[in-house]
Figure (cartoon, one colour):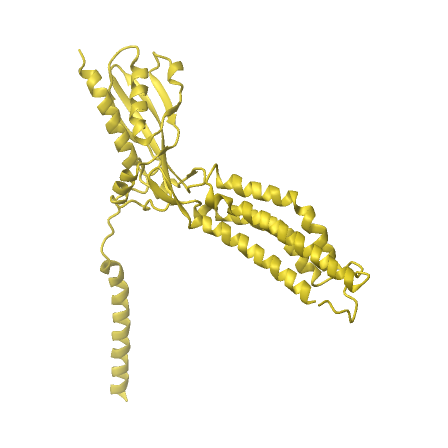
Length: 151
Length: 190
């Protein structure tokens, strides 16, 4: 159970990290036409946050749901379960590093529009969804046999 | 007992009177607000500013006026996008035009903020666009010009500011001044 809790916390940490990265766009100022202005105005907050939520919503929503119902059969053994955990952990880390890098890119190179940068992060996230969807869904959705020590 | 009743009556009357007095005083106690901008009518926000200019009489007056407007828009780094000056009917006596969005210079923002506007311009990049119409009669040009204010972040596109939140006359004033300035030398030419 501890591994599942850890992985859930990791997901929430990356989600908060992503929100923090986009929040900084409303505070990070750049010079345009001789005047300093934040990269994004508050009026655009809903749209930018919406993009982040659309990336993380489906997977975090499913993880939360699997804490209440586990529809899948348990792993055949503890070793299988441990491997599933490593697979879910590795794919989660890879996915989130890519998505956070894409979201943060505009802080360092202001080329084009921020909206395009966040849209491309979303496109990349959806393209990489295969990495995280099934490993996490099956890991969190599998029943845990009574007495199995998860480590 | 009767004295007590009398005292009670006067006390309650005094409290009631003082309460009424405080209600009456409230509006009078506040100084009249000086509102520098009219909430309706010409000049506020995108409302039109109306004026006249003297243009050289002749077949090219419509073009001449549009050229002067184009020159005046340079202050805002904007340009006329409609109508196409090269396709303008030279004998047109009525022309509607509009500009793209140009950056408001920093110095102008400071001046604007100093004029007690409805909303201070800060923490954003500001742009202004104009649209207008002019009617030519002999060598007199009657014009209507409206300003629209835009804002954006460093990485965003323009979004239009509500017309109630700025004073368009401030920006039109500069445009009209520049239009007149570019017309005067031509008018005095032999």
